[in-house]
Image 1 (cartoon, rainbow, N blue to C red):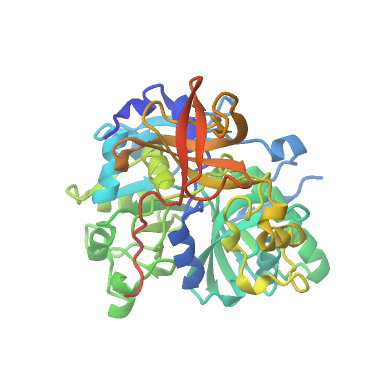
Image 2: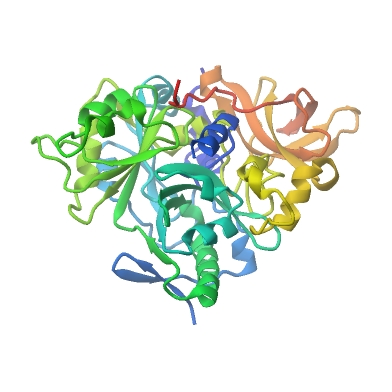
Length: 482
């Protein structure tokens, strides 16, 4: 198994692997993940609980800028509700998307933490992510304009992976998981590193909709008063189930075996004194590791200490639960074939170019009726990719040696003496689950994207052989009906 030397150069090296991590998120790419979720069913201001925050204007340069893991900004870093807990557990804190976030903890190396998640259960703080609540008679129509998903087909308390799309180009503004809570009520989570861009994008779309349909047509809140944690791993359900409080819920509601991937419930947990949490937690069966698990949204309005209380409940199970940071989260998501915004996807790519064409609902592919942003660009790419797409996102396995990192050039090996550049690596590292085998995502020219195609990757001035492979590298393990 690869050693922790992958990260020994510090947070800056880890940065290239772990920028703009997402939730439920969050990021997308695994074939199994999308199949399960897609079938499960003067500056403006935006309201944030009782506060209002200003959304800065976004210029073209900032709009397309890749947000890095290790920030060079002199701006003070934000802290999640669990910052003190991270420090108490010996976390190595690094700048990430404007927050001070844990890279890894004192008790486990990166590789050990990765393996622990695959074998038991790890708890990740993802409270830096942006949680949204959208409601009103226009909520569904608005979301079906800015995303290509068939949200009208979602049943209550079910989720789908999707993308926010630029209106003209169909470029990916961000990736997101959208949950339908009711007929006209939605909860969704977006990336922390895209906060400024996403809020400006959403504000413009919502203001335009309200102008046409009235100020009461949509209500939008950013849930700043909620923490978010992800419990991931094969032991996640067995760890969570005993903590579910059944005093004010039926046996059917509290039984996690019937909470399937891509669904959610509001449930209370039982605190050490036997009382129930003062507020219910939104428990969604989803995640960003390829493992079974849950993302848990924790309100703080009734108790500011509730996030730390909940985390400590999990950590009491020392044999099965450990804290995990950004390092393990990134290697887990790459093995699961999931995209990292700002690296594997950006506004420069449409969903078809990013091998995410499945986010476009089957019933939304008729050019005569398609009304979502970028439909005129995206639909021809879906119907005739060979004619319309210059590059495609693929998985690569690379021969032994130094790993192919982000930015490594992919070349055509048909003339080894004069290799021609045909693409670029967007994420890559030695896979902890595959004994250190080198894996990577890349964009390659049309025609080189087929499985089994032999290519080369320039690593430290040496061309290493690589093969185009299907993703994920590690089969995802989602809990679904038998």
